[in-house]
Picture 1: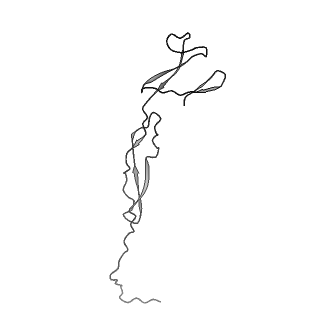
Picture 2: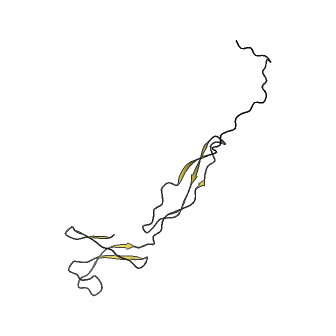
Picture 3: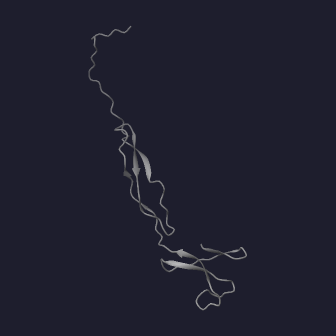
Length: 128
C-alpha cells in the first residue's frame, strides 16, 4: 500500500484505485490545503510520477533439449533450456533466473556382453 511520510516523521498510509493504465503525476501539498485540484488556495509541488501497468505474470517456454545425452545407455545427462516468452510486469510474478538445467537420460542399463563360444590358443591351458 502507498504511504506518505509527514514532515514530523510520522507516516500516513493510504489506498488509491486508479481507473486506467497510464502515467500519473504525484504531487505534494501543504497540510494547510484543503485540496490540490484546480482552484486550490496553494500550489501543488510535483514530487514524482507513477506508471500504472497491467499486472502480467512471467511466462516461460517449455523446456527443450540443447545437448545430446552423454551416454547411449546406463545413465547419462543432457542440458535443457527454457526461454522467457513474456516478462512479468505491473507487480506480476517475476521470471525465474534459472533457464538451464541438467537432466538424466538413457537410464536403461547397458546390455550385458554374451559369450556363446570361447577359443584358446594353444588349445590346452595349464594353470600352475
